[in-house]
Image 1 (tube, rainbow, N blue to C red):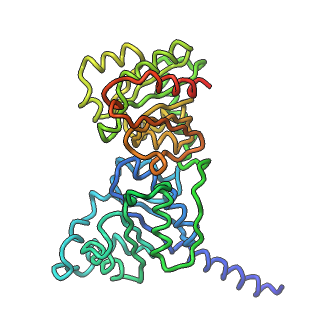
Image 2 (image 1 turned 120 degrees about the vertical axis):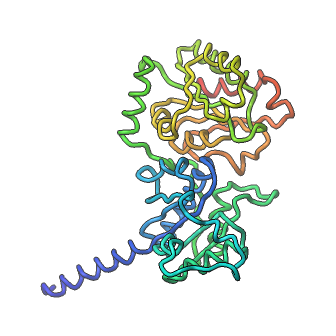
Image 3 (image 1 turned 60 degrees about the vertical axis):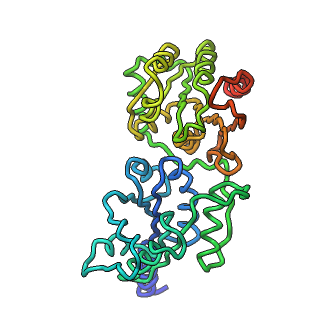
Length: 350
């Protein structure tokens, strides 16, 4: 091939690469940790199926700050620093000024998927208008919760909504339970080890992290169950660390926190990044249907999740080593369950 043809071919490849990189997607996700983790398969599907150069997420930074560099999410944007409340007004009262900051927020995206607003709502209409002020963009509004009779996993619900509304012939890809959604770095693991060293952790032993809380009280297995499990595995030479977040510190009395401290090390007020770093060193995790449980599963940690009223077929954590235990009885939150404790222990000690 002549030299000139080689140059032309190289230029074409570079132009094609530049065009691909310029096609970006954005997900508006206002939810908490678990919602953000369960959005990751959708982000990967968008990137692969729509051939996007990148997918960003706009949400609460305390929940999404851990995603870039560890997941398919490329960039995060703060929902708290964006005037999205302006998009909820009636379209006739919605106005944009020259070089409006809202236009800049959405100017880089060819595809925008939002969990805020409803289809045909004021928010959606104003978002479409704003996004198309600078360029042509596709806007899709997704429902965060599936219908009551939905029996597949939530990630399938998100993906199918995108396919149905995209107007394209996209091939549905089932989320693989073996997928690791969040890949820790060497720096994460090193900082996790440093955190354990500060507690004089015995690295010759295995580590199980227990997080007994959840966003909803009705999702919380009775605390005595977790204490019983911790005592039993501690007697087998396994180190146990309890994680308590702000919700648990508010809910548990000082006596209950003393009960936890009498059984195992109890850590409070860790940032989400520190929790991730600690989990990167864990051999196992036990928790309710909660955001931290979804995080542990997404990291690939051996995860034992206890479900009460929520449907695990829809909301089970995604990860390669997840076991779900279900107790939908009225006593789930009110009293210990020796039977379920034994089932969980048998799986944990395998």
